Image 1 (cartoon, one colour):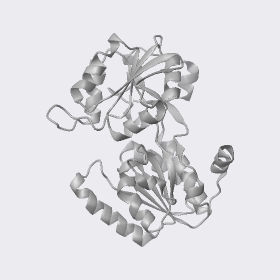
Image 2 (cartoon, one colour):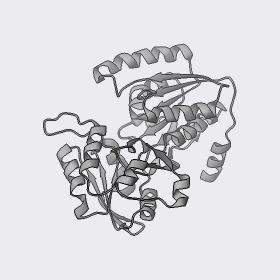
Image 3 (tube, helix red, strand yellow):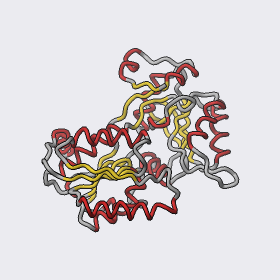
Length: 321
């Protein structure tokens, strides 16, 4: 049944002349959003009336979110979409209930939380792609890159979304073995603990693989900017830092790895939306998990750690800076 569905997904034809609303958690200048919006448009094409709305929750203070939500709800009432595509957890949290109350089918992408965080995931009008790190695929890939590859530290913030991803894959275990490599999994929201774990990682591990680090605070309780935290870690680390997400790869950030691709998430979400536009009910479309990633590497990061990719991997990789 799953193979039949995936074949239908890949071949899903388009029904012409429909209206599609894309609602971003963030904004188009943010690379993750730009990549998946471009992918959505590439599949849905010019045959549909596509409207893109930005909740802008990375830049707007939280106190202004209700006003922005009301503004977009008004625009949704005007355009009357046949399907709405929600990007990431904030868009789902802020808009999903309203959309299904208006009988508008919802396709989500980039959502890390499960039903405990987002009960509306189980609504019959909702389907989409749960964003999940490629734990096994990443470790298998890194074993091909590194000379020493026996022990890895997986370091994440202690957010509900990362708890959900880890628990879903590993259960209650915080130690695991994948492809013969031993993993320790650490989740923390404390800046000092997070940084000390990176700085001291060389005493026990061969590399660090980073999840999200967006809910970390310092000892005064102040929010720590993720980019600044990762840059600090890059300069103080004595081991290479890899990532499960391509948006954390760059100069003085993580080196790269086999990462989740916003472009691929967008392509898959667009095909799910196409099925709905062709009359398939959302509750007949199973929720998916991230289907495929891509190799992304920072050229300066590779040079910093004196790492070299094989010709085959290099030919398949995207390079930044």
